Amino acid sequence: MGIIDRIAGTLDELAGDGDAAVREEIGFAVALAERGDGADAEARLRDVAVRAPRLPAVHFQLGRVLARRGAFDEAVVAFGRAVDLDGDNAGAWTALGDALARLGRTEPAREALRRALALAFEPTLRGRAHAALGRVCLDAGQTAKAVRELRKAVDLLGDDPEATLAYGRALARLGEREGAEWLTRAARRPGAPAALFVEAAVATRDPAIAEKLLREGLARAPQGGAYALGAVGADLARPLARTGRADEALSLALAGVAANPASQDALVALRESYAGAARWTEALAVARREAELGAPPPPSARLALALAARDLGELAALATMPSDNDALPLVAPRAFPLPALRAFLAGQATDDELVALGRLAPDDGARRFVAAARAPAPPPMGNVLGLLAWAHELAARAPALAELTLAAGRAAEAFDRPLLVAVMGEFNAGKSSFVNALVGDEVAPTGVTPTTATVNVLRHGATRGARVVYHDGTTRELGAASVGPFLRELSDAEAVSVRVVEIFHPFETLRRVEIVDTPGWNALRAEHEKVAREFLLEADALVWVFAVGQSAKASEKEALDLARGAG
Image 1 (cartoon, rainbow, N blue to C red):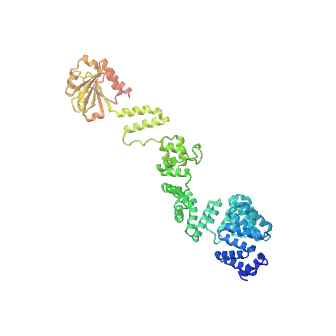
Image 2 (spheres, one colour):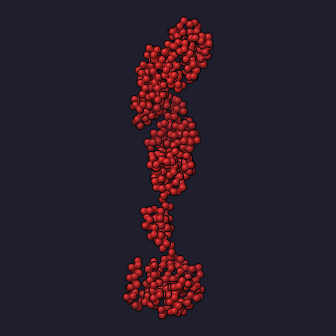
Image 3 (tube, one colour):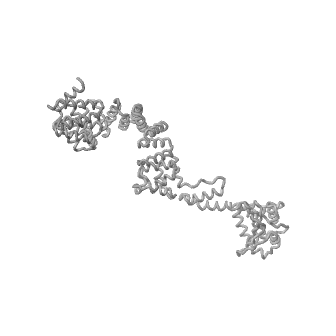
């Protein structure tokens, strides 16, 4: 018996005592549809429906043809006409409920399927009604009820592809381990789309099994073309990226994007693969591409990439975006710390705000980048004065180092001035001769009598000359030719009023070293003793000149003890 005869025999029950030619034409149209010629089958059935509008069978078969090509709105009209003409046709009620369910019309679908179950006695027909009702419940969020209906469908239909797939999805949504097994069974069915392996991998709780399923799907994917290969490859790339297999993950993710450049899943996989390889700039570029396509990553994910890439432009863009997280506490996990980001970019972030940003930083380099906002500039190399100034600034910024601020400032100030060397000794010990020899010029008066009656400081100057500083604060400038005569001819009365004489000389060494030439220690006037002692205590170094023919005196020992006590 051929297919036309079998269909015609079935239609005898549907058409009743109708015209045999009509039944034969319906059977021929159904055969065309079974062979894949849906357009011709639809045209023939519409023609029969015009000639026999009250024949339920023609509307039923027309609805099936329309549903097969996805025209569910038209299919609902055809099935509705069939049940209007024959309200006891369980098959038509089942088909009507299924079509309504696929259109998302939950309640009408549910009513139609309940009517079908009330009328159907044949196991296969009841199984299809239960399967359709299970899908309706699943779409409505009634997962537990969906599982019960689909379990009945599987028991009645056996290894039906559509029923077993829906049952696996319902179990997976309910969090049952068995869901992954049913989805795997559906994925391994000949001709099943490779993407079902992705569903099965998502449903399993075992990462190793999930990877195995994705690889199995990847092996099947070439049969579905580049698109399927890219889709499964992208899904496999994400777990690989998260487990440190960045090279393989990146290869699969790139293939996924090449197959479908606008696929959100493929772009997410590529972004995560770049991140897994610590290629932060490329990952950030993919995130921008996602945003251009209207599905940007969460702000916290973009912030993490921008911190890792040290991309100030992206950070500035993120700082201008509105956020509902402004009021969240800084310790909220994965919150987008917008105020902290703005303070960071302004150079005003507190420690707590930097910690909030650091929680999102994906690696040590990114965390160091965040922490650098509160870190001092690198200390200068080969510059002791610069190092002292750096230490002073650091101590001023860090409360824990506050007590070091004064010492660091004094050290910087002291180092910034020339080294102060005091030349001292008894009168006529040769102090002035030593100074002249050191400078290489006659800058200090010498003689057989105590000639140095004042405290003289030899300093660098652009030209030779001197400045006399008196105890009352007044000063007197001396030209180069006047310095020697002034010092030699200074009367005792005038010497009493002089606090110090500054002698300037363009000798280059004096830029780094200033020399104090004092009167003989045992010839100090009372008014000069105080000044001499001040220089002795302030000096960085002390040169004590002994007379070759004299042993150290008690007065010299006293002065040296004083110097040693001053450090």
